[in-house]
Length: 475
Ligand SMILES: [Zn+2]
Image 1 (cartoon, rainbow, N blue to C red):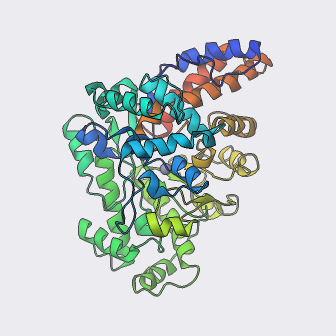
Image 2: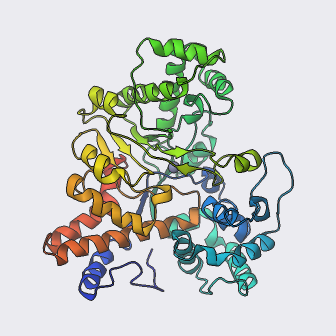
Image 3: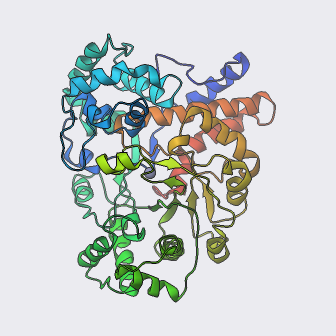
């Protein structure tokens, strides 16, 4: 999606490199979007209903925004974030929007500002600069756009030129929305909207209602999840259902990257946990062991494994108590991969049939651990900078810190990882611009001929993620 208002956005400031970067960016500017990892609600596209008001669309669900205001003392309830206990929160979109506009200066220099501004101008064609004074004018302009048929989710999906979008569901999801999408010609294997198998709520022993979730997993699959063997069979069965709904990957959000083969002890640990008698260390050991089990399942069914470690979930306990999870209360921590992944790599690291995409929230690991690992094991690929790191500065540093050891072709392409549907084209555009700048420098320094830089940028934006995540015939 071209950014007409600021054509040189994020391109190098040095004129020679800028000219090269413009040429490279022009090659990928309009390429289709491959979005292999994200959290868009599939109901949005299954039902294709008009979006709510501008605040409900752009502010309330965006925890990047609400956490920044929280850090300045604005309670999430004042921005419409639902409460856990049903106690009242602000529901008036215009008031939420005004409150947000009053605090817009907090976002100077942040990627949130960039994404939101580009969303206003490129998606909604609203060029007004947001401020407390223009809040109402912008709210009305955005609301008017959202009432137009061209701003229904499926129409936007077409306009955004998304070739494939992966959503993320738990094994307990009935995949009904994906069935609806498939019935409408939008989903299913090879479809435009596919699911991703994310089993955290039946793997993480400390997940709320873990045991009840495992019961439910048994009911859905007809397997006896009272036993460890039944539990594994149930997971395999759900993976089959997800694959039938188009899934090509699984996603694992663990505290650490630790892997472990518990062998016969796994069943005993599972039994303990099911009886409510988990011991200290069981949660981490079981999660670590299950990564090996999932790798074995992947060898059979071909799902690409995505590993997202390093988030301390619900670090802000006050926020969690009032508003629940995924509302901005998580914080990154130091993450170790070299020793943590050894059991997995000893077992399957050199098996090219396995494909594990590693992400990090710990930027220090790019040069020291992740690039050498991805650059040395057939099963490993390096995922794009994610979440706290999905900014222009880190995307740039990512190329600078990993390319010399891992090259471009051990990376997996950009992932937007977003819940914010309208920000998808903007986020992919930012990644393409940063890559154009990085490759332009290699060309300017005579380290890479222009024709190879041109091929590389198209690979990074389109061909590589498509191949890594097994979308389409080239899988
Ligand atoms: Zn994610």
